Image 1 (cartoon, rainbow, N blue to C red):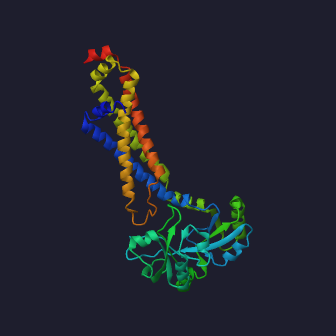
Image 2 (cartoon, rainbow, N blue to C red):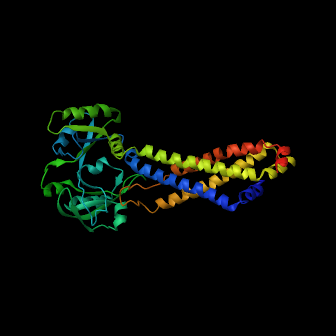
Length: 379
């Protein structure tokens, strides 16, 4: 850049002010990054939901069970290719703060419907051979330092008593967004020991042969069990995951509101800073025009100063947010997917540049329209 020395001289004319402005961008973009992470955590289940999977729950409530016998009836419905089931366990490991999802799963078919969870074959066979075996996600294993063969005691809350499991397999996600904090064990082991609701499961998941037939299959499933003691409510996996997000409130609106206030404030602060900087340099700008610099050059110089501040501050803020997420989930399992995607980082930098450009437009236009005679007379 031919005039970079001039640009740097102007930026470091007031180093404290420049530093504070950079810091403002850094704080705003750090907050943007954390909000993007939180949004991604809440929408993680929606983003990774299978287009060919349906979830079937009790029509009354998710916490109400469904009969185990429904599985065979589901497989007879045209369009249903595979079916499996799971049951929420809700136990406590050591302390109630150590939350992580625990599911009693269908050992025969669960793995087939969720191939994104990758498990070594020898480990899966070890799990099948052990009635008290369990499968844990790699994120959960790293969190508690579990290894294959460890004995894990969990205190039941819904199903009372102390339940002990042997870690027989550790799964990994095939995608970045996949949840690797889950704990699975065999449903037949749960059904043998639980004192009530024997022969019942929590919910079913089915794979349909053609995703385009989802609406028809959903209707057929609910009609199959209409007017029975255990009526069903069927949704696509994406719709089912979205319903959970809605139960937490309008997270999207909250994040957008906070982000909008922060960036609007940043716009005002930066605009005021640049306006002051231009007023302080009226004489210099007039001299530059007098010696031959064009109005367009003066306009570009003021815009460039702000864009450099925005780029540096934005990059610093996004970088700090990324470093913060590398430490993993700070909520103790409430947000297992705690990841700042490159796409969100790029969006943050772009937003910072847009704010910088908007903040500099009016001061830059004022500098461009400055008349040499008027400026020198004013000083």
